[in-house]
Every structure is written in structure tokens, then in C-alpha cells.
Length: 114
Image: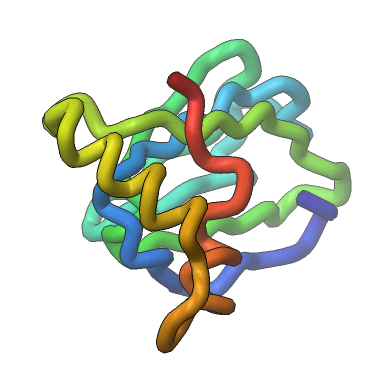
């Protein structure tokens, strides 16, 4: 994420996956310049640490430094999903189509680690 930028508050409405961010490079590490807010909670990115959160909850990010922040992002199944629910979601992804399919496909792309 480039310096002096913000990702506005948004949600992807996908509560069946969780997102993990591993902070790789954080400009001004420890000076609270790069933050992630999920719901009412705001956390600072610190190099070498990770955060796991539900992107169906409204969230935003900010980089108030001059440098670029780099993270490794992984999206994984929500641990409370049953196998039958995961199977159904994978079948739905393979079939595609239908009303809202373009937006749904954007949300589903590159999101599963089995």
C-alpha cells in the first residue's frame, strides 16, 4: 500500500472466509502510521506480526507514512464452517452464473486454501 493513502471503509460480505495479513515491510514500524480498523477495533501493523479478521465486517486501512507498506495476504475457510458447507460453496463457485455472479466471482477469486 503506497504511502499517504487510505482504503475506505468497505465489506466483501463473505463471512465464510477469514483473511490473514502478515506484515512484511511497515514504514516507520512501531510509530502507528500504518493501521487496520475492523469494526470498532484499530490495530497497528508491525513487521513480522499477523492479523486475522473477518472481511464481512466493515474495515479500512491507512498508511500515513511516506513509504510503501507490504503484507502477505491469505484467505482461508472460516473454522466454524462444516465440510458440507465448504463443499456447497465450492460447487457454487464452479457453476457460476446467475444474478450477481460477476460481483460474487470477484469476491470468490483466489480465496481458498484447503
